[in-house]
Image (cartoon, rainbow, N blue to C red; front, side, top):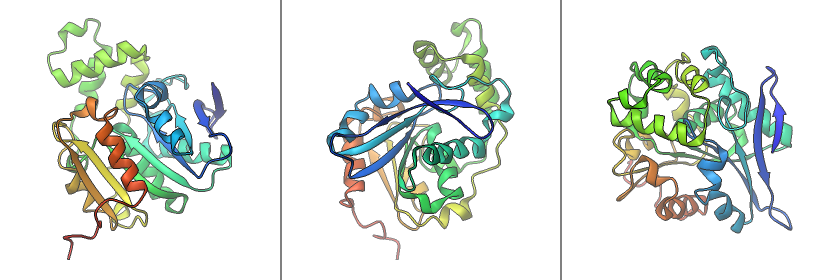
Length: 264
């Protein structure tokens, strides 16, 4: 495990995998809630897929997850702090510019990082989300926190919450840190700043991902946005699926349909 310490004193774990003979490009990966770099990217085949394409792969355990520091104050998990961790890791590794790929919760961190430093990202990939990302926030954070802290998971009645609690338990994650994570107070995403992002943006989610909404509804915000729905996939099955990998690689290779198509 490699690690570094952020300017605010938080130690974060990461992987930095470079193919023999040098990389042709670099991608930084941000996992989803209750996951980690190993579960979200290595086990699901993304590390190997990028390595076969001669890409340098950087996978970060976001604060509160995986082998990174566990913090129990919601204020430590503000979206700008998470985005700052991404930029600090890039500085630590001497990476001036790269592709950025976030999945589920990781998309919010990725978006904020791109808003803070748009010149540092060549392409932005937002997975497991869609138009519902823009809907006003509800009390889901407190409900998810309750699910993380429940002594008996059998008392969790909502399937969505129960699935995340089960996933957190399977990964051995620190549920108290996760509860603090989801209770962080963040302003709504800045849609005007999103609409000014200069890089190509891919929004991709499974058609059966009821929590995401239509990827195209989110993609329309970006000047160079493209939304793709994956048939037969839900939130959890989309991340390892071959269709997701094919879509991401086509996007990075510039082979998806013209993102301006149908706009004018």
